[in-house]
Amino acid sequence: MAFRLLPALRRSISVFSSNYQGSKLGGFSTHSRKSPGKGNASFFALAAAAAAGYSWLERYDETSITLSPELHHLLMRFWQQGLESNYQSGIQTDVPGSVNCFRTSNTDACDTSSLSSNPFQTESQSNVSASPKSDSTCLTRHSIADAAAKVAPAVVNLTVTQGLRGMFLGRSIGSGTIIHSNGTILTNAHVVAEFTSAGVPYKGKVVVTLQDGRTFDGEVINADFHTDIAVVRINTNVPLPAAKLGSSSKLRPGDWVIALGCPLSLQNTVTAGIVSYVDRKSSDLGLGGMRREYYYLQTDCAINEGSSGGPLVNLDGEVIGINTMKALAADGVSFAIPIDSVIKTVEHFKKHGRVVRPWLGLKMLELNELIIAQLKERDPAFPDVTEGVLVPQVTPGSPAYRAGFRPGDVVVQFDGKPTKSIKEIVEIMGDKVGVAFKVIVKRSNNIQLTLTIVPEEASPNLF
View 1 (cartoon, helix red, strand yellow):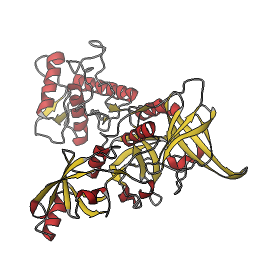
View 2 (spheres, one colour):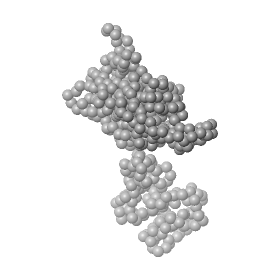
View 3 (tube, one colour):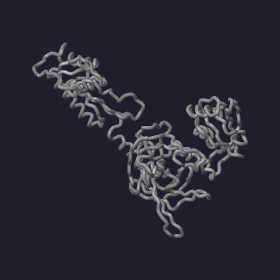
View 4 (tube, helix red, strand yellow):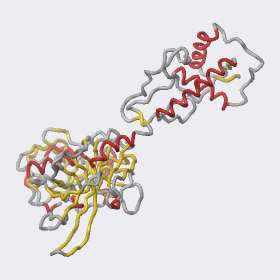
């Protein structure tokens, strides 16, 4: 059998010939024939490439190698062993002789330590499989199930019964995640509370159902309507399974994620998808009534009524978000609150009993190179900046107004740190109310000023 090989594959055949056939590929018989087409050539070339540890490229030179029946038989046996090994370990092989792994970390390659130094060893010479073993950096057929299993015992169903003077008015459902063995549960505020001008009253009696079927009466400890985060507590004499919280700061579009919850009261439901977008602004979602920007993770996981408050999980089984809403007019467009934001909200609850939001009185717009170029075309006096936050509007009587901000200012530094986004300014302020911050702004004709601003605590009605 003859077929064309890359130079690297020629070397792999030479290795085989020196070990099994002597110094030359001898022993040709009348069974040798020309390959009828590219398909058979690819089959044996890929088998040799997999055994030798080389990558296959869809380019061919004009060299032809003739295989003896012995070599043909050995390559076939190796190929069959590779298929069986890949099937058992859950590694998906898309192309014959190649191993395809979905990456779950920033490694460059799968573990190939199981490969023998002699890629053509037979069973009699070595007990080591010729196929690479799967490791934690590859997505196998069990990866999603394993990750879901880690957090599933901590996922609960919340049923809120609403009534007035003994009259039943309705029932709402949602999901939650136990984050501490003492029975502390994270969920959405809209699941257990309603926002009015008088504050955030609780909807009614909260019944918590665990994965194993046990039920408890829940108490709403804290709820914040704007971040849509609430903390519920149940009393238990035995430790409860708790989910591990991860980090959402390093998520990228395309990362695998898993959504767990109780949609339509169907407990223990698992759906999977990817991160479609990170830091999706509330203004992008039409939530224009909120004066402060909030950021969401956009995914294509299936989210339905009752999923709200359930965890969004990475492949390590860590909670990286709280599912909160979906687009009604589209499928595969769902949103979750990043866990880093959730943790900050919970810290506010512990420290203040509420979420403290510093207020500046500025309307802000993030700048990039294209927006800056457009603004300079409209107004040649626009300051020479490469990044920053534009101030198109200042609220009269606000802290920013008193500090001397003007429409058209560009914030380039806030509290001594270069400023690229609104999110950075919000994070720098944290919960610091009544604390002075130094702000460097640039105005028309490149006038640079240093202003001092003292944030006030925002009224809940402002957001």
